[in-house]
Length: 109
Image 1 (cartoon, rainbow, N blue to C red):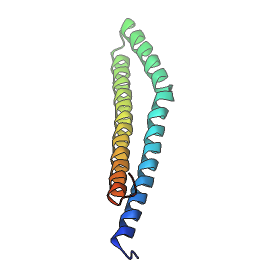
Image 2 (tube, one colour):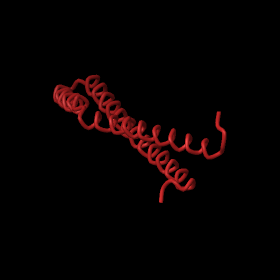
Image 3 (tube, one colour):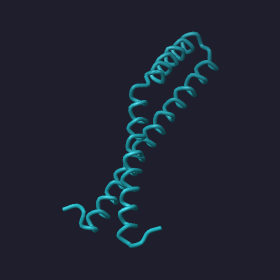
Image 4 (tube, rainbow, N blue to C red):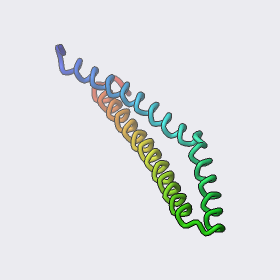
């Protein structure tokens, strides 16, 4: 398939570059979707109002369920942000590796 090591390194650099660009696009999509998605924020606001009403009317079960929902929404937003940031770092690592492979081959000044 590859006749020389040079061909292999060119192919490897190209594949890493393309994967890095794809992963970067996916991570940007994940992070912007979280920033744009105001549904979670709306649910959290309504849940807070529900909890306040439950406290004023002494409904303990309602307050407990509302706080569980708030904690679940908080964990959801943290995990989405964590995945997005991890993918950004992965993309940067792939692009950097592709650059150094290309530089080693003398393709990049």
